[in-house]
Image 1 (cartoon, one colour):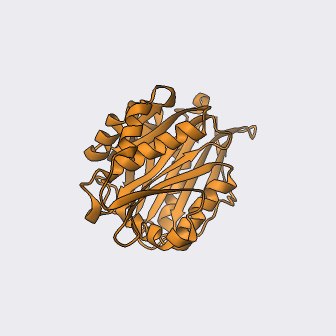
Image 2: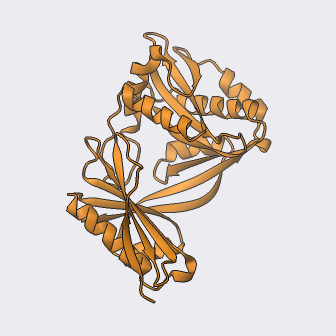
Image 3: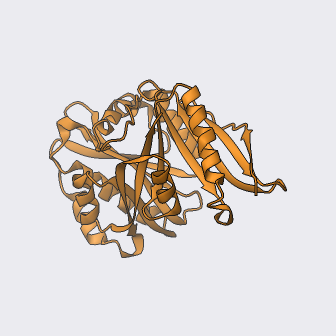
Length: 293
């Protein structure tokens, strides 16, 4: 059965990216698949596009995904992008599809989950309460307080050297406006953003941070976002300290929350060890694929 590919108008534009979309439909105008292509606008990422393709299971192996992919890759090339990245769970149809279409694996991500009901509250209290000379913890809900905004934006460079293996991801540049916009986006979709940061007591600057997003109704699973410690402050156990405080906060303030999810590059052995020590258990693996255009 033939399919028709229709470009769509997608309003999901932000200060740092814009998105293109396509709808695949059959001869009876029944939708059979979609493709979304995010074009990054930030300095350091203007070479990059991120692709998501979904095809109804009944329509697979009928070239629907291939036609959607061709449309998206052509658009990326026309826009001057050099790389298209996409993600698929290991062993899934998407995994096999991307490999067959010339994408190469550039990053392996390990996903883990902590069941909050089984979290060791005594161990968490001990970790959070253990002194870290020269540092103190601060927390906030939603947008960063004004008095910490500049140092928080500056601390985001802690993520610049996180292991990305062969992904041509580029460098994300953060400023106060961007951290506020990111928090606003979480708020507008109805979710809760909670941040824990370690502050250098010698000068009041943020040395590291960890972020957790909880669904608006406080049920299901929360999702860890970025966790990072500035290079000059590593080796003091700040990452584990902050993440333990984040877990403790989630357990105390969201009693109906089932668990916490996190993903870590396979090569990021340090963060994986932190997660293991806090009780996270592996759930699945995904691959980041990349096509050079």
